[in-house]
Amino acid sequence: MAGRSEALKPALLSLLVRGAYLAVAWALSPDFSAVGRYDDSSSYLVLANAFQTGEWADLTLQARKFWPGYPMAVAMFSGLLHLSTPTAAIGVSILAASGSTYLVARLHGARVAVLFACLPPDWVFYGSLIFSEALATLLIWLSIFLLSRTRRYDLGIGVASLAALARPQGVFLLAALGIQGIRERRTRSVVMGGVFAAAVAASWFLYLYLKTGEPFSSLTGYGAVGQWRGFPMTIPFASVAHELFANRVAWVRKVYLVGLWAVTLWAAVVGVRRMRSATEPVVQVESIFLLVFAAYFACENSAWGFTAFSRFVIPVSPVVLAAFGERLPPGKWAYGVACSISFALAVAIFLRSPAGPL
Image: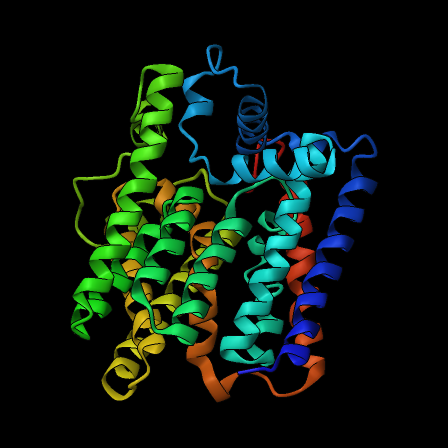
């Protein structure tokens, strides 16, 4: 674990990297139109504007399928500081990414946090532009950090439910907290947290019903627009094997995704060993979090689950990095090389696709 002052250094590195990345994006697109060209980004901006104006009648299913945590935060940030919606959206992302790095440093030390500031390369991309990954990651690690300080599962579950309101990956942390809480016989605390989480979900569904008449569009939207088939599950790694032989993903990207999958699964195995030997509840929760995450995406039957895996793995990547322990490079030059390569790959992602990362 890093102290407060030591943890600020990786957080500052995260800010500097994302500031440099925005400078590159501005240089490549002086009018900054490229920053909001992605489907997700434009939908988040539409939703943020809807929260500010209260006008939901003209929203398409494409926009309403997104979960509300990030656009709500953008709307609040924009209103409080009197910023334009795109500026507020970018501000929320880069500040949340820096906050996530700080919390990871407090929990796992500066060495893990410095690498997490830039790895995986998709984290630089999604943590700098108009996407919800950074906010969800901040809330996920805030939940874990609060658990480490208070050992209150109701508090951890409450914050994790807000993370789930930003991105569905928060559900995996909710499951991990519930499982570990029950293992420790903290059932009352788990139930109290579960009641709060249910109230958060019910509030959003009620709001959607009042505004659109369709309370569950956030749950059904992805399937309706053909992006995510979800259940039923298939044979593990069936979609991975299928996409390896598909032509729509470049071979370099396939090698990268398979390597990331292999590292994640190896970390999950290490997590099982840590669960057997560790006594700290945070270590147990992190290990279960990674196991639930890996099990789901190993069996998820949509092609998107594989091709966008480098995006979905962002919130659990500190657990993956921490699994390496003393195997992480000791020299500062190694961090510089890793950050430089990650930054270059993130720029390549920005350049290669006009509609989003490969």
